Amino acid sequence: MPATAVLATRATFADIVDRLREHFELIDNPSDTVWSAAELVERLQGKAGVMSTGSERIDAALLDACPQLKAVCNVGVGYNNIDVAACTARGVLVTNTPDVLTETTADLGFALMMATARRLAESERFLRRGEWTQTGIYDQFVGGDVHGATLGILGMGRIGRGIARRGALGFGMRVIYHNRSRLDPAVEAETGAHYVDKPTLLGEADHLVIVVPYSAASHHAVGAPELALMKPSATLTNIARGGVVDDAALAEALRSNRIAAAGLDVFEGEPSVYPGLLDVPNVVLTPHIASASVATRRAMADLAADNLVAALGCGPRAGHPLTPVNRP
Ligand code: DGY
View (cartoon, rainbow, N blue to C red):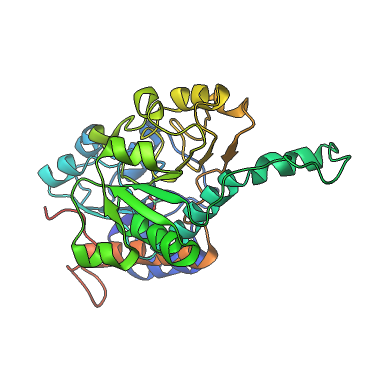
């Protein structure tokens, strides 16, 4: 019987490629080219499974053009690049990579919030430009304190709770959050987190961190009306997805000092960045690296590969992928 054929859409660790080749006939992408939708459809012909990433859109049109596809195993906890309902309707299993990236992503979220509050990027650029010519200026690059401040979290899933722990237990922060549903009181008690409505979250947070998954419901969850509710001294950090924040409205809020500063790891239409965000000094920008530690990127690839092997009926967990998103 010919081996089951699968596709890995982006470059990955060499041993993951080797492991997939133990089970499948694999087409991989060592040059890490980002394929167009048409190129992806072409390469998916005859493939039963795909190890995908956020850079590929898996939608109804693609599924209809690739009727032999049985499993889409995404490297990433977020899967807004995949139309899960369309997959379910066609019997295609979807998996993601939760848990393995929670702490690494929370680390980056907290680091970005701190860098934003204390103006690290802005002051480093100043120093590198050779503009630091006088020491001891009393208000040079003064920012907002992190310790003891109010940390507002929009989206209190696993990563949001990781950020809450860092704030409450490491920095003595008061934690407030808004979520689709209120957490179990025992979970709230771990960090003393208080559930509040969204206007209260926006109005009371000294540092707002956004960790809500992207969906039609969360599109532009923070735009001009929401930014208008924030304190002028407040910061906003987005490690969720581009599109949860209205980047044009945010750029204007930063330009007019409506809020103090922002830290952004994700962008609408990335890798393009809204030009207005590049023009303002009070923003720290990173290229979607929240999960980018060596150990975590490896764990994500490992989990996605395990899911693909199991989803296509191979390995010790044949038929039982570890982290399914749907049950087709
Ligand atoms: C995720 O896991 O969703 C991260 O954003 C990496 O893509």
